[in-house]
Image 1 (cartoon, each protein chain N blue to C red):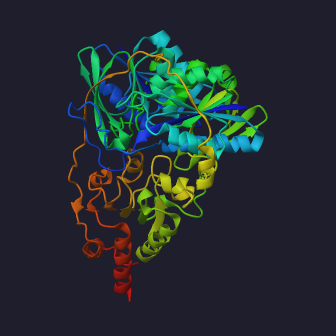
Image 2 (cartoon, one colour):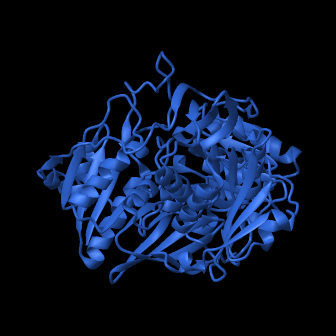
Image 3 (cartoon, each protein chain N blue to C red):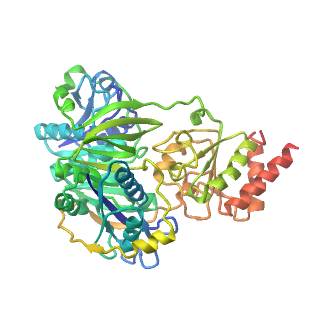
Length: 254
Length: 321
């Protein structure tokens, strides 16, 4: 089986995000970039499938810091790693990226394309269903378990509220991974050093297959609506206040 | 123009979010527009009993299918659009909707905007406000028509569930298409709440990524025990295997409404807020003062999480002695 994995680097949005002066983008100068969490899980599922039933895993990565995560992917067991050029200071549109992924899926004779179910920049749609529709392959998003079964996969999808659906999926297929079958593995420093020798290929981007989705007229940071009464930043004081709040609501120590 | 409100559910039942799509569609409909509720499932009865706020119901029926896979759903919706005409497709942001929205947009080469919060007409286009970066940024988008919009749950109220007249229901038999699907549902797993049922809990202490590591969850667990609360986690915590799936709050976990919800180290991604924003009293602790969790919390604090858990536990122990 040939598996193609897509890794997208995303701005670390856990801290404060600032906008550019023209208000059309986020200020990326001081931001850290990290691997899209869902893509990390997709990579793990690809490696697990390789270990369980044998496969060649090719990994494409795009965005700032792509080479770093490609070395990590090689250390985890990827067979071939390829960096794609990105547009500096622009969000990674999964809608536009889909044409490139389709091109690689064909040139690498992929039986399976896996990527994260979402990314924080997929404003114009999600990668797995775009690629699935373009290739006319079956696609399932929101997976939390993937197992090979002959020329098919058994894939479990989270539907919310604890409900899940398991599908038998004929290959070739595209999967949007929410949670890997097992948590992404730890990679030791020695493995990373060893993998740093892995050559990183350079891929080419294809033009988007689709019409423009929308024109972004401006970005803005949602205003805090002030609904939360702030208790401060001193832990002792906050604890005291919380105890009082609990007691006033009839919810003291049980 | 046709405005398609995509409904979804399983075993012939329609989920409540479907009625939100009808409200969104109704809000955009102008004189002469048709709001068409689209349903795909094993039987049309439940949909027909609820989607009366739409002008019509088109029901794609595969009598043996508890679940119509998204690919089949998308293909059938495209067929319906080819017959009925272009317009606006409204898809809920859900596990199914994630597959349907982009699949339909790709097949029709229509624009698509995801995570939509607000929609208005702007001449021949739509003016749409959508979330980026987990809701930390909002994007004002001008979207040419026709278009697909994937809409956040809760962005629109549910339309009143009323029956639709039989003469406004069109039924299509898609059994053969469903049977030919290359992704075939083989099992539906339902949660076993005998161990823990967060929905029944009065008090919940929920930990997020800010908890740092598995060992630190014990501190939160101790605090929860002192409060008589269930311990719960956001998606990253559960994905790491630190808490069981049944203890996950949010879009892909449980939707809860306890009397007390204490959010520790949770930033408040839209998917999490969807599962807990209706709680009676929400106390949130996060070192980022701009964390979206503070928009739904009643009380917020930006102190160190571990200092707080320790201090609060000590005070609760003292008050109980």
